[in-house]
Amino acid sequence: MDTSTSPSIDDKKWFVYISDHHEGPYTVTEVKEKVAHGKIPADGYVWSEGMADWQPMSAVAAFGPPPAAPAPAPAHPQEQRDGPTLTTTRLEMPKKSSEKTPEKKSEIPEPDYQLESKAQTRTNVSPPITLVAASRVSAAPQEAVALERPNGGQFQKRSGAPQPAIQKTSASSGLKALLVLIILIAAMVGAGMQGLLDPVLKTPAMQAATRAASDSLRPLVARFPALAQFISPIPTLDDVAPEDYEELKAAASPGQPTRLAVAVSRADLMAPLFYVSGNLPDGAQVDVWVEGVSDTLLNQTAFSGHATAKMNQKLGKTETLRMADGKPIPRGQYLLFVTEGDSQPDPVKPVISALPNSTVQVPATLQSQLKEKKLLTRKSYFLGGPRDQTYVARLKEFHDRIMAKSSNERVEVKQFTALLESQIDGSIATFDKLRKGPAKPTKAQLAAKAKAWDDFNVKWVQVEEQINQAMAKITPDALTNEYFYGPLYQLTQQTAQETNKMHELHHAFFKSTPDMASFDIQLGEVTSQVRAALTTLKTKFDEVEKLPATASGLPQKMPALEKQP
Image (cartoon, rainbow, N blue to C red; front, side, top):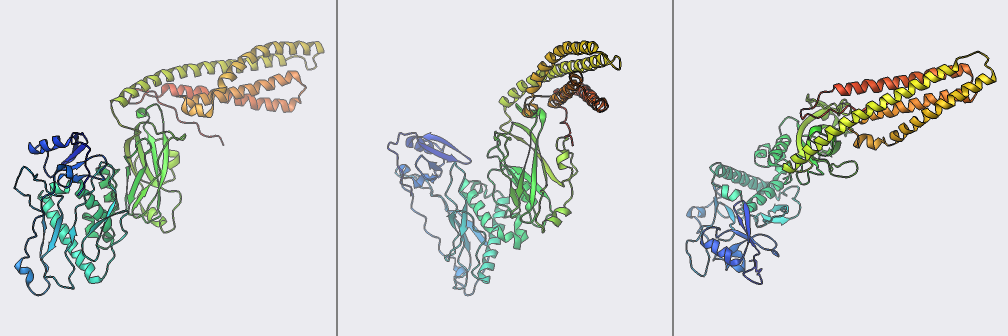
């Protein structure tokens, strides 16, 4: 019995567990009044700060002593016959007392669910198996438990990691235990189909005990595949949505075709990790590629990332996924693509090779990374936080800013393009004009040409410096994170660099005496390069102007530029 008491019965410190939720805090008096009026079941669980876990009211001193345990039922006459007998089993629950007195409540201690085997007691017959309902029920994640069967024959809860397998003391006892287990499962399934066990199976304590038993008995599934419909082939995952967990179980079920399922852990959607299940050998590696849907991302226009999972007993788990700077990923809708990993152990390679390649469409932003990989499955999730009204309002504000920013950037790039074209044409025209003249000009003629070039160069350099100051702000990080049309600004920067290179060659002609043969070759190459850069910039700008809007009415981002060899 839990002897925890409160300094005062009027302290609001008691919480009461009702069906599938808890209420409180209440005082002891309030709890007793609610029990008397039937608002709280007399056999409910209570908890207060300082208690290790939830306890039945009858086991807490503040709510009165527990009733006397019911007397054990007499043995059935048929159980005294000679010879071992194995018959059907029954699941019994203690009966509730109908007596009510002012001094004693009608609480019932937490029930023990016993499975009795109607067989004669013999030294070579396994003792009855008792499944004890776990009493640990708390608001925090439940501690993993395992059921052990000591020499006494009773499964008992033990804290810690589940045992990897059940130790078999002998062939006969192992077979008998398995037979009793199958009978137990059949009885519970039959009762469950009729709804008789719903009030019991839905309690947190029974669910914890069921998970613990499933984890302990999982190794039997490999020997007896029929048990897969009762015992999960993968561990319990409390951080996965129920429907996702069922998909993970189905993909890992024995005897099923090799396929994969992927699910997200809901423990932290701002820095999520992912589970992958399937009938793959231990050591197999799979990659999970995560691509944000641009229109749905909050305060970001794009996000891509990937993580690797290593399979172990049909289940793999990735590391958490974050931004490159360690920040949480932006809130929004994401597409998940699972592919084969880059490296596989030799025994795994033929299994991966035999898997079918999924035919789902891959976004253009991922096609270059996935074109040589076998695509195994895909899924979509909303990540980065909840999809609530705050998200909807902030997303609209962000989209309004994108509309304004994209419009301003197109105007600015168009101005840069016109200015660079003017600089290019001006430098070429002035150079060609001043270069013409007699084959052997006089010193006076050379001096006049040099002065004319210097006067032009002063004005040209003033504009060049303004352009260079603007181009200096276009850093690689800014191109990715600050500009909506980052590739257009990258092309503008490249055109400005080619323009400066050409003008420096023009200037050197009037300030030195170059070898004309090599100078003309170099001049032709530089002029061709600057013309090509300007043409590419203008072509890409026209393509951006013609891009249709997205489904949300936003302008489309242009693809990243291909890396130059």
